[in-house]
Amino acid sequence: MKKTLLLGDNYANKTWRDFLGNRSEHVVTNDQGEATFFCNAGSVSVWVIEDV
Image 1 (cartoon, rainbow, N blue to C red):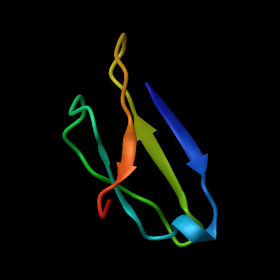
Image 2: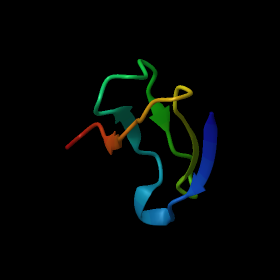
Image 3: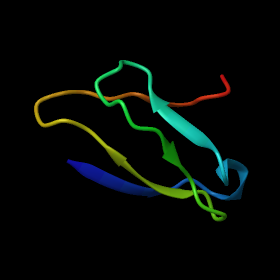
Image 4: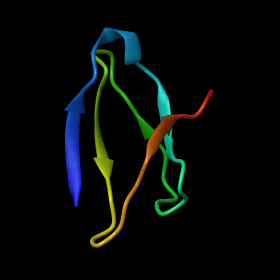
């Protein structure tokens, strides 16, 4: 499953990771703060900024 989100300029060019570890890839937002986040079927993912 996937969801594309526009988070806004404040979140532009940020690297995100799944805090729960269900997804191993990292997601990077574009210049407008938009990215596609993934979640395994029947699972939960909590995406957090990697810097935090």
